Image (cartoon, rainbow, N blue to C red; front, side, top):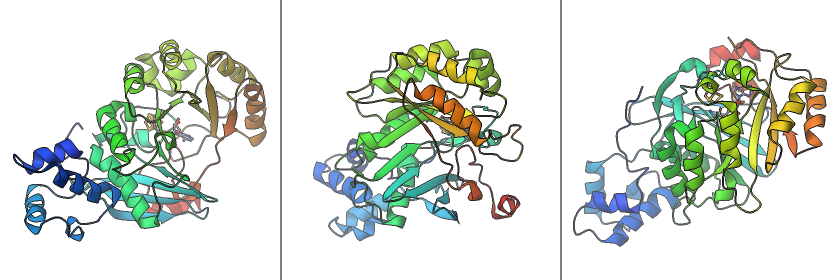
Length: 354
Ligand code: SAH
Ligand code: SF4
């Protein structure tokens, strides 16, 4: 844990590239390299013949490109694709999921290999933390999926959710740098309105995220309706209390027409009663909030059950009276690509659930 990834060209911004090129370098050269890496998404800088050959040779000798390669690919019956992408810095791999729906595409990316937060319902938690991803490794997941599936980041119908492996707010500098590159019109070209980051509730980092000039929308994994229940399900609550989390949410500087999102994993007989629903309403009162309910996606070693659809509907009906709320449809359940299922499951593991 804590091991740093070796630097790569992916992840560098224009000032970093200028510094890399060294004294006397012309700024437009740095911009050309930036354009090739992110806007053109070239697999190899040698494709960029507008760059002088000596410059390409210099760059190659200085740093690897950092492109992620497919280790494994799993395709679900519902059209979802889960990738295990190899990180060139140390050969570890990370998971990235593409969920197409009608003419929309959502790319779910990871911020860490594994996760140090010990949520009791989540398979990723069982891995612990291997390490955090660099900005280049975060951007690289998006570049890979866009290239492989011919997606145009500038198109209105492509969204990014930072809801894969890891706790993004424990890797905030790299998450923010990746967001700046992803949302730069000269970079990858996404709009900030189409990126969302989800956190388990690292309270002090919420204000830091709110202060960032370029930042994703914020989603909070609430998952419980009171302190004691949340401590049991998400032990991080012992450090960051629910009341403080709600205060940080209320203080979050929302932009015009922006909403805070809350996720609530429903566990049968644990946090899915009507009384829980009423407490959720009370907790989120006076916030500009939307709530997503996720019926538990099961997995080996997860000591909870999925509630019946009727229970989910009853819960939703109560919350719906006070704020917009939705039930998230599981995607890629058959290939362990759904929420909370990312643990590098292998083909032989998959057989048991097909
Ligand atoms: N670590 C961040 C980002 C991951 S998002 C976070 O927890 O917010 C993953 C989402 O899936 C979270 O909202 C989490 O609460 C939810 N989740 C985790 N395990 C799950 C499971 N087994 N079934 C359904 N949702 C789950
Ligand atoms: Fe980490 Fe999120 Fe899973 Fe909790 S739910 S263990 S924070 S990935």
